[in-house]
Length: 255
Image 1 (cartoon, rainbow, N blue to C red):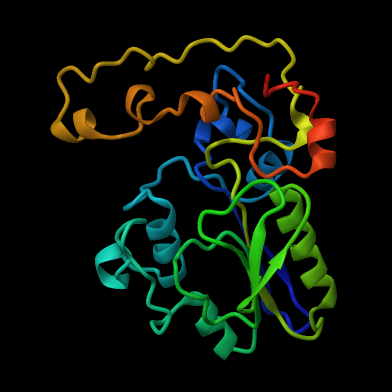
Image 2: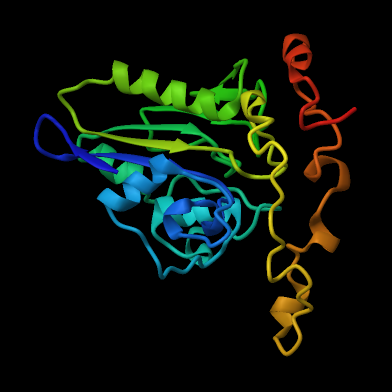
């Protein structure tokens, strides 16, 4: 998203969601109408919607490394989420913009193991991050916030925007954890769908007959990947305060 700064250079705001399938963005017209995303839809209507796209390494860290460097994983060195550490000395978009006089900030999920570089201000989740009351790192120092992570990232981003120097252009990365599993919603949204029954996807019983090895060995299946208690919401979120537990009401997480 871009708007113009005082010196007629574009301000840049990058809002990133995590593991957000196209079927869960209503601008793409998914036939089952799983959810409505009016604010994202407005961006799509007033800007550009990508209908043909390729993710060269669709994992959390590697995709972020590619995003900020403009390079493939074998160039930027971040191949996976298991044993890689991002080399912050390499050229990145925020460094180039910083050199051009931009104010740069990163708020939310980072998940690249090393500290961010090229940012005048950064406040990131520790590792993968948690949904409720997340510990974060602000410019190298630990901090902790109470609340829901999406609200926290939005509030911190708004706070930084209000305090920035309005005479200079800015680039802000507002990088969310949601809706990455275990898909824990905000307490206010626990009863969002009431008793709605969703139709089963066509691919539910797909056995990948007639397709290649990659399809047969990929990991994102119910049998291999789904966690019974966490993904099916059979247990309460782990990091609630006593007051949050009191308000939980077990609407979605039965005892």
